[in-house]
Image (tube, rainbow, N blue to C red; front, side, top):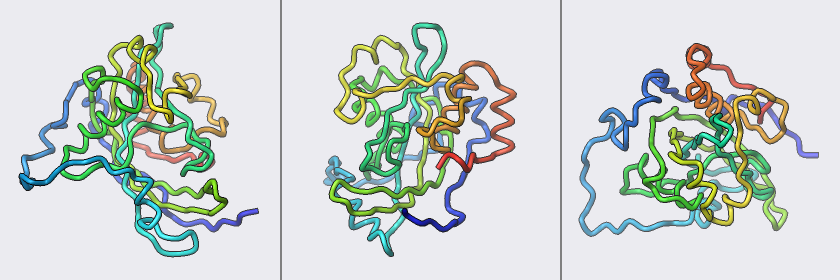
Length: 241
């Protein structure tokens, strides 16, 4: 049996206090002009790097050392055929961080690119969608999470991750229903409604995506006062880790 000690690590670093207002405006990559034009060398070539290939030495050993990971996520929402809004979730693999938990799209962001736009494009690719099938709404905030897991070789891993999370809407459910996503996403999509999320004892829930999905669905289903209460009275469900 693995033993644990308690540390004050997981938490809400910064949450968008304008979330209720921003969510209903398609802000695009500028996000209220929070981005500026900056200098990128002309000969710099943007290229995809598989985070799995570099995360090992980056996060260090299980016993000691290592740096904090950075992940850029997006919570995707879609109106399903029964007329309700749902969060689009995938199940993490048994040998990944947050094993067997329901999770968001995204990944380790690439340098030299607009981070919000990169995240939306990455999620679209994961689910087999075109970028123009998604609408960027706003940013939820920045969060810190921890996870330990076992690799297929039986080695133990542990990481602390800073998670920046955006809100996105899939414009047409049929686009997602017809899509062929990559092997890690399309095969196990779960649609979570507000009623599903209120069953907090589901062992597949982790506090971070659960909080994000709750906020998004409360807004989309017009429970605005409840959403405002969550934002102004931030509490983490400590059983969802």
